[in-house]
Length: 395
Image 1 (tube, rainbow, N blue to C red):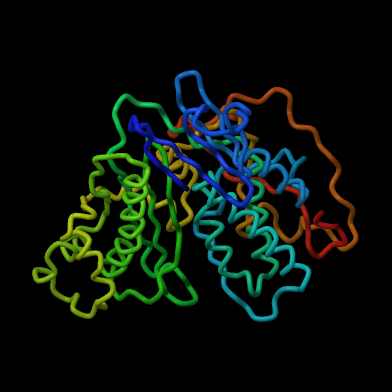
Image 2: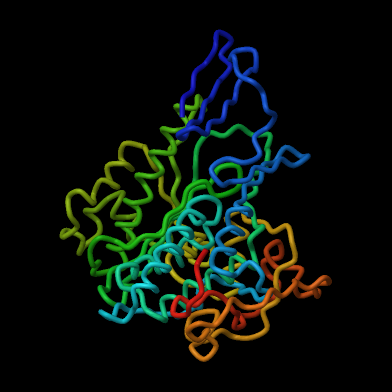
């Protein structure tokens, strides 16, 4: 990204990625042909609303991915990308070369979606990516569960509202699921930062070492989030957004906040590594500020674990996700952590499932729940899709 101010102190921006670029400036300043407002770049669709708000989505890209794995015609959907309480583990030699090949293709596509406009699947994709070296049958079922969820929500978009107040900084949330990994007991941490009422940066990641307490785990998460907060603040400065306030981070662990501000008053934290105390230096320098928030209002919780439908939908709404279509119906619980169990998997050589049209008239329950976070939601139902052990082709 390149930016400058002209003689009248008006900003000009050029965003460039290989041969795709966006120019935000006065037309007469550059010898370029105006093709109108940007509508599509790098797989992301840009929609402008009459009230000045901007919505970003990846509807076309998601449908291309679903078609590649034969999920574009299914009428079954799920209300969450991962079944709450699902626990997968690595078992050497459990998968075939075909499963591994298709698993890697699916994870790569899902990662791009999660990094673009769909923070709601960030944890599920990050979790499943851990098994990319040795995926098995149950891992593939979990991937299909995510695809079922995207089939039901492929038109969801991030909505950035136009406001009267100037942007002066970023605010974010940081959270940790202590000892979440069953194989290594390493904690999972996540953060999300907001601008214009919606998420602009988010992460779901395993920590690099085992934390011996929730305070230690949350402190490591603050380090992870603090670095991103500083980067976003510096980015705003480069975009000539001044004055820029320090990045503000909310955490639900008071002890971690106390360590960052005054470690002398907190016992049992002397073992924390020197480089991890960078978060304390960020606070002392005024680069970031910290506040406590209740666990029920911790939006970053969605990046650390699989949540139930009601809490999940509430957090999705808080992230700025909105839906523009009726959701696909889901009638029953899924089993085995995916959108189908072993008994419903295609047998080798079975052809692609028949194309089934979507219902023309959705029920009231389908009119859903993304814009009504308190609305009741049901759990997934088994669905058909691509089986890597059959003779079907992924393309």
